[in-house]
Image (tube, one colour):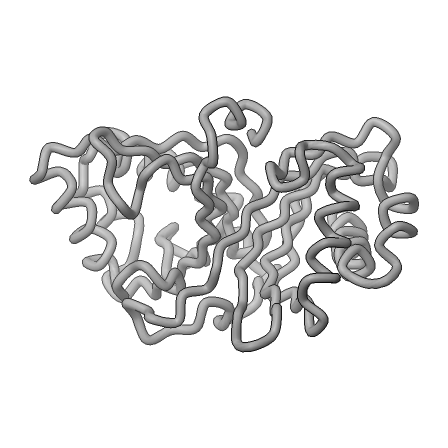
Length: 260
């Protein structure tokens, strides 16, 4: 069932961002479908208008699905949205599927910055290895350690949950575990309290996808009310060796409840 859900999500998303978007919505979405993407106004009709507007505004528009992961009712797509003129967006799309229909969707998107703080590409890296169960085996432990690291500012835990050479695909972070710790250490030294809330976690082979909210008080420019999908590749020791993310600012506090 999990593999079928993964392929259903891929088929739907490919058809959605095409001239067949109306048929895709009618075929794949349930009657009681719940939309959490704020750019759609949280409705199925708003989703249709958003997609039509996106395609009309960008004639060269196309989507490339780089990762498709699934876990029970959940399926996740990590997508490169190409608008033309070397303007690209990273998109994270999470679906809940029941009885062959998509019943719920959460999404996040961010402009891919070309002025990177690491030498890696946003979308490159290995595909999921489903011959392993590293993600399922270590997900709870990993999430607990990240709560200690981000929420409780016990920064030494990142050295336990990530390898020293931790590869960073997010344009905003430096490579290696030290790149992450450096940002958080500076925040801590400046009296900035960080927080992290995890809403849902998907595991597939050696990949973990964590749906999170980060926040800081006082605000930090890199972690100011960020609605995020983090994707990690895990090793046999339960440590993250690679990381991708899609970070989207929460546009308004009143929207947050509908977004999660």
